[in-house]
Length: 215
Image 1: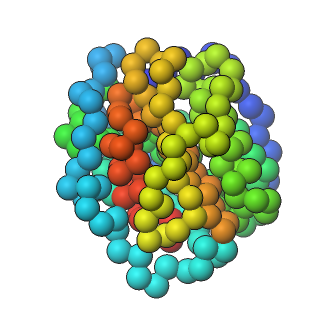
Image 2 (image 1 turned 90 degrees about the vertical axis):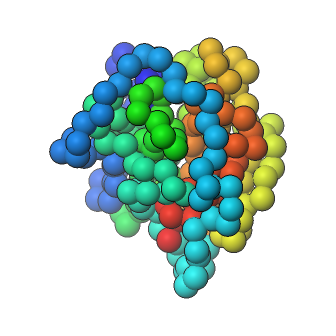
């Protein structure tokens, strides 16, 4: 994902024995990247219908997040220019918790800015507070101008079969209309940045992706 990321490491993260699932495998086939933005996102068929099946999903308090190769019909991107470090501060990470930081391509995307996802499980505090922490970090990452927003300023959308809450917020300050979405439930929290996307499109994509990212 292309962005105006600060030049130095944003944060010194102490993760200890935390299992960090970073989707940054450089051995997968490379795809070219240019500076041009991809066309405005449209939700693929999988994202416009019912999200991925959630049969036998553990209770919300015991779910885990995973860097799925395909999430809501969108393929994880690991080629040139893919996120290669922890883009934002995930908050306190304790042993046994999982952190996912990954890029996903929109349907038919070959170049341009990609969806950036940050998700964490086993959250010891109120997951809504962790979502807000992630939300603020991602806004700062997207705008490089300080944190300007909380989940409370976003619009609520259907959370789908996994429950919890889902909210999305447009970023009019961005060079193009970007949208940030976040979910929170009994033990997990996640946020994602959707470049050049509308609120309804981003919410549909995010809810569909969640069905494959949270198990």
